[in-house]
Length: 159
Image (cartoon, rainbow, N blue to C red; front, side, top):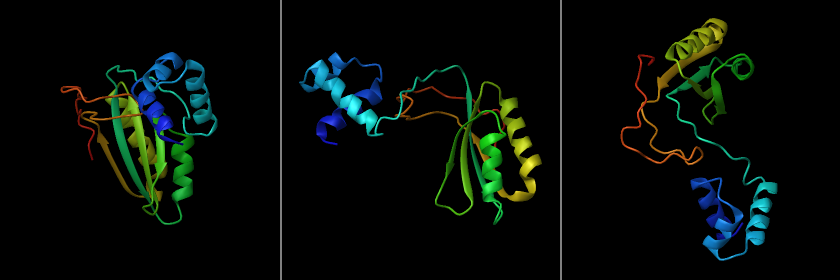
């Protein structure tokens, strides 16, 4: 990957719907050459997909789970397959740690999600912490730039 590829990635982060002509014009190459570069980035796994950010008044919750020793795989399997509203699941370098992002247009759904995880995995969990996102400051993958006042209201789902 060279500086031209980096420029293309920066442009697509800001607007994934840019035409190959617009990309080519911005970096001084033809539409065909720009398409070949983007195709190569896709085949190489650098570009793995394109997202659309839709703002519908949703609530986002960050969930951190630390499992009891030896119970990590069971809890991870549960949250990966048996939970709704979860959009992303990450494992971290912290031992027995799972980080999740859940989204719903209703805070009651998110409260229910936490209650279900506690009920079904309670004995396997050493710690469970959750926070509702108040404001997204930056999200390069979702195309979000900071806008003052773009807040989600905390509806009492903090632990």
